Image 1 (cartoon, rainbow, N blue to C red):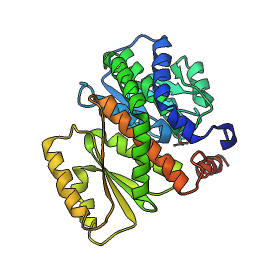
Image 2: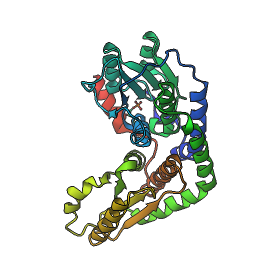
Image 3: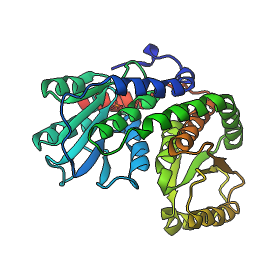
Image 4: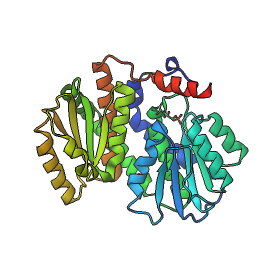
Length: 335
Ligand code: PA5
C-alpha cells in the first residue's frame, strides 16, 4: 500500500493534468498489442473510483457513435452477456482493487477479449501470467490524479479493436492546447466557485450526455475536499429529485454544468430547474465549458472541477491527497 508521504501535493498533480494527457497519448502510441483484434459484439469497461471515471468519460464520448453496446462495471460480478465476443477492459491504478481482480478472473474464465490498464500490482502480474495485453501507466500517484493517463489508454484499446478511429488523438492534442491556454483563467474561475460554495455541500446537475463530468466533480469534492455532495443528471432528476426542493436549504450550493451542446429541450429544462431551485437556496452557480469538441469541453470542465476541489480543500484546511478511510476499508477487508 502506498502512503501519502510517497506522494507529491494534489496541487502539483492537477497542475500537470494537461501533460498527463500528452503522456497518456505517448504511452498508447508506443504500445504494441500482442493480440490481434477480433470483432466484438459488446464492451464492458471495469474499474472503480479514480480508475472507473475514465470509463465514464469514454462512454460519454462513444455511446452515441458506435454500433455495439458499451457498459461500465463497478462490481465484483460480470453481467450475464459477457462471453468470448465481449471486449472487457479492466482498469485498476494500483492493480490491487479486489472487485476489478474478480472481474479479470471471471472475464478470463469466459474467454472474453481482455485488456488491462494498470501501473502494476496483482492485476499486472495476472495479466502477464495469462498473456493478456496490458497498457502500463506511471506509478506512485493517487489513482484519481492519474486519470489523464488512464482514460486515454481505453481509447487506444477501442481503436485497436476497430470500435473507433484515431480522430481522438488530434482531438486530445487540441484539448491539451486549450487547457494550457486557459489554465490560469480556469484556476481563477475555480477560486470564484469555491468562494461561493464556502461551507455548503455541493450539488451538481448536468445533462446526461456529460454525466461523467458531474461524477468527477463529486468524486474530487469527496476525496480531495473531504466533503459530501451528490450529482444528478437532467432529465432524470426532473422526475424525482426536483420534488425534494421544497424547503429553504442554505446548506447546499447548486452547480449547473453546461457543455453548450445540450439539446434544446434540455436547455429549457435547465432554465426551469434553475428558477425553481433558486427559490430554495441562494447559491446557484452556472458553469460553462469552453472549446468546440467533446474532449475540449469535457476536459476543460474536469480541470475546472479538479481545481475547485483543490481550492475547497484549502478552504476547509484538509489534506487533499490522503484517503486514509479508503485505505482503512481496504485493509479491514483483507483481515
Ligand atoms: O482515488 C482513489 O484512491 C480511489 O478512488 C481508487 O481509485 C479506488 O479505490 C480504486 O483503486 P485503484 O484505482 O487502485 O483500482
